[in-house]
Amino acid sequence: MSRTYYFNTSMRRKPAIWNRHQVAMTLVALLLNFSRSLLTRCCSSLAVHQVLRLICYTVALVGTAVYCIFVILGSQRYSTLSYPLLITATLCAVLYLSPPSQSKRFIVEKSSKWTCCEGKWSTSSGPWKKYITGDPNINIVATLIVVVPTISYFMIGIITRLQQSGIPASEKDHGHIANVFGKLSAITMSFFLIPVSRHSILLKSVGLDPNHAIRLHTWAGTIAIVGGLSHGLYYVLIWIFMSEESLWEKTMPPSRCWTLNNDNDDDSKMWCIDHFINLTGILAGICFIGLGLTSIWWVRRNYYHIFITCHVVFSMFVLFLLTMHYYKMILYLAPSVLYYLASSMPIWVESIKSWIQGGILITDTKHISNTSSKGCVELTFSHRNTDSRTKLETCCGKYVRICVPEISSVWHPFSIYHSNENDDLKIMFQGTGPFTEALSKRLRQSSKPKVLVDGLYGGETRISDAFHHQTVVIIAGGVGITSYVSMIFLMYSEMSKRETETRENKFEDNPMNSASCENTPKTLIVHWLCRDEELIEHFNSSYF
Image (tube, rainbow, N blue to C red; front, side, top):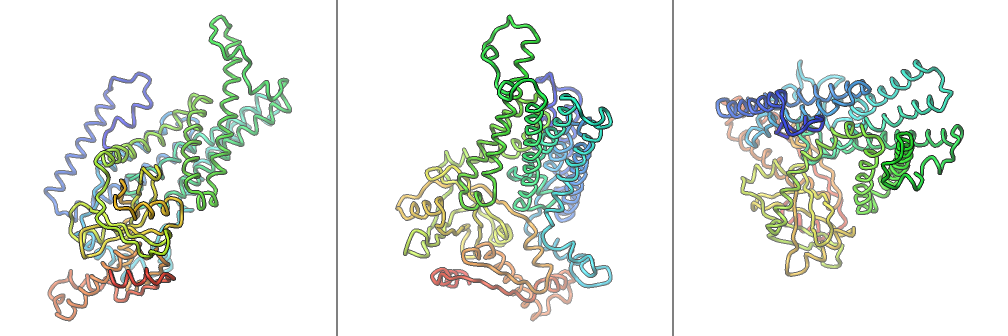
């Protein structure tokens, strides 16, 4: 995403030669990158990260707002839908810097004066407190970004058509109304891949957890499916009640249309093209139905492998058929597809490199319960050398995606945690599904399988949110305790440090130490509900 040619090549009719606009955008990106490096070297680390994160946050919000305006004005701006999202993503990729671990704690302490501590100017004291703490209401975010712009575009299109032709009476007038439903689906698909792109820079810039962002993809996909099926159903009703041809004749091209014959006149060619357009539309509608049925919650929860396989296959067919159905569809799909490819390509390259090198190094495996293959398994693997505190802060609330090619090509998410004993990272799972059960059996063998890891994923605010409260309560069930192990270690370390500083009175001469003591939680309560006695014994003996 740091190369500016991503957001221009999709719209050009004459590729291969850069114009002055592309050269200017490249120079701007290089200048921004140089400025970031200069600021990092010359200014204090904390100030640089605070300023750049604020700029990224502002740029991401402004770019998303511009995109929403482009969606509302879709009939005039559909050819430039790629610009606001991809330009914004490029700027954020250039400017974004993850704060170093040593400055994260300081940022929490400074920001807590305005978000936590009770006082006259405290934003957490007052009737608005519940709106600024905790996770965002993703349904409201989806409504503002997805629902409002697309429905506004749809209503403007319907009203404009009714003003131009009045109440539809002819087949042509009804066709115009049906096309508005189709364009509703098309313009929604300009966004639907953004929330599920791996390591999305826009999500990082605004601090949105990828787990929550999936809801944006669900909303966009639902509107796209409903709009596309409504478009097709409307045309089917037109053909049944108003067309002289039968439904079969309208959708299935005759035999002469399947031969490459240049002797046909222009009218005959257009007649064949219309039939192929109808056929690809019907096939896309069938794929839409399959995509929707295999994406319902029950299928995702109980048959994840079927869900992900059908999701990928049907999505690829839908994209291809829609492009064949409506040639301008590639302009609507460009923002999502280009952004997804730009975000995912480095992950694919890294995965191929890891696969060639033999995957990650598995240092240890522990089968907590040896009674059956469904017992819990703790998998330990090496990680690049960093200090233990950095890993504790990095692992809080995070997860990785794991792929074991000899078992399944699907990537599966697992919570990650770390202890102070060594530099390795750990995951734990229970063999309750086809993949985890097969992996548990495979790890019992002497030779270890090739494991690919992609991460880290997850929001960056869980630990900072915890430090905004004097009392923290953690509730976990069974193997779900793994999501909080790193957080418990880090918070216990900070609480012990606070007690030591309080006892030795070291904070009196240093205001920063005083702020640290005030904003460190005083009480940590953990409620862990677990029926596996061996799992409880393992965590008590190994970590607590």
